[in-house]
Amino acid sequence: MSKNKKPLNIGVLVSGNGSNLQAIINSIEKKALNASIRVVISNNPNAYAIERAKKYSIPNKVVEDGRYSERKEYDTVIAEVLLKEDVELVVLAGFMRVLSPEFIRRFPMRIMNIHPAILPSFPGLHVQKKAIDYGVRFSGCTVHFVDEGVDTGPIIIQAVVPVHTNDTEEELSKRILEQEHRIYPEAIRLFAEGRLTVSGRRVIISDCVNTRGVLVNPPITI
Ligand code: GAR
Image (tube, rainbow, N blue to C red):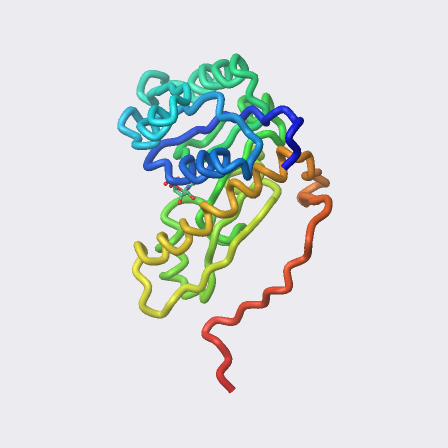
């Protein structure tokens, strides 16, 4: 990591446990990621993610859903907070609200989301259960830029995990979450290093090493 470069200012939006927020904090603490979390915003006052932010003295704010009848109004409030903090990248880490087109246009290709499936398969909610019910042999997670659709933006990085025959939703979610914690800090690092260029639907990564991994599930035993 370059020592002289100014850290990337990020704002993290959360709704729940905040284990992805924790992974990002850990990566910054380890100096693997040159970023500064300027603010954590939650729509849920009971989100454990807020406790995590407090523990590290990261500025945090709860902006409750119920206080705003219009999506646009809510989004204006959080956009103002992020802009005031000079946030350069908005990181959605388990943020369970859809953002308005107006918000997205204020941060073009500067909002990332993590999704617990291999997009474009299984967008939306409860996707670990959907993957099991569908019978896929692999699932995983995706970090992508946010565009005006739901889980449709250009893909930055994905990790694949096997789906086992007797998996419960909890078991698969845990296996996926472990990979989320690896790929989210990596995606932010690539952005911070200025290595991501969006070309149509594709994200071009400069100086990218090609993976040689091929996965088969169940394994071929002959
Ligand atoms: C993660 O699995 C994340 O991928 C998912 O919520 C969980 C949040 O966990 N996000 C979505 O489903 C977004 N549609 P965390 O609060 O422990 O980071």
